[in-house]
Length: 495
Picture 1 (cartoon, rainbow, N blue to C red):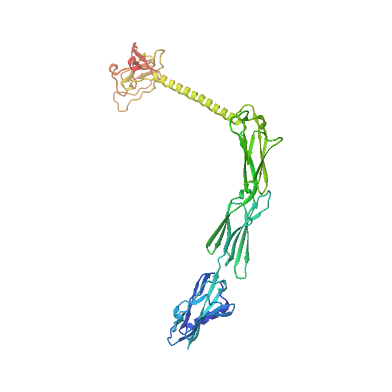
Picture 2 (picture 1 turned 30 degrees about the horizontal axis):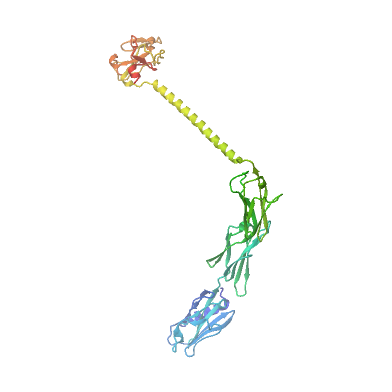
């Protein structure tokens, strides 16, 4: 609350009085809530023992007018004036003793009222120093009263209804006013207004507007009021009344003559308030003799006959209105499988056939791969090439024909540190090749070669790449030629 200009005069007086050695000490601002208790402190500071207190007076200062609240006199005692007599008292008992102590004259307000908001002056009358005083500003707050009201006990949902207020949240007589918000899953909008009152309080009213529908039934709507960092919530559950929604169940589309099952129809409804009356009818005819009706159920007392075929209608009624549902019942001579089941069985059969075909294809591929692997293993040498050397001769690759002779390089390399060997070179393009101990032509090099044991081979230098011979080696019955031109014994071939 803003301090009026006239109050600064008192503040200045307090400052000047302190310069003479006496001062009244008080709080500058105090506050409290309606109905609560608050203390207004007042302490006399005296540096001169010769100054005596003659009287202490509390005054209410409002709109430029002073009103006495309480008086403490060393001789006359204590007096509290109306309308504060029942709610104001001095805090310290020493103030009311026969020989009172008036240095601390704090007063206590009980059951604080909005009308108590004002500036309060504590004035000391002394002899011979004169008057000394100070002032405190008291602010009174009022917590709003929170109330949640459903606009109507029931809401009748109608097609194309306009927006209506389904609930109202009130934050009444707040000082300062509260802030109202809504929490809900409903699609709607609030409409809020503030209503001021003469006592300085404000009532905040907020209506929540929605288009009524059946889905709103039993939905929660919460009002949240925030006041001075405090939060208060109130929740209601909406009650929406609507006429019945009707659905007939029980016909599976497969009623056939003399079906042994116990059959019937049920009229299922959703309604608020609940349905109070059911009525069954058969369009274009009367109800068959073999039918029993009890409220929302229609039961067959005997076997299925053609007389049961037709359109059955159920009327359901509550206090809001009446709604209907119907079902067409067909009776066949023999049972049948619905189309969706046939499609499903065909689909399952297709999956089984496709899976079997796929398994056969996988098996055939596996057999082909196994055959190829075994065939290659039969054509593969299983011996140790490290124990054999290649020589030139008339060897055969395998029974069935001659093997192709491998191409020899025109230059045969040798180690650089060899003293006994020389690099071969082509002599004038004549097809002759030269070594340190022999000259041989292209015909010699084009002969096929075969493998023999090292014990049977001639000794040559370790770095030589080929071993030419002047004669051809004869292949015996116990030897088998290989695809690379070598030959091995039949014993090694079948290992």
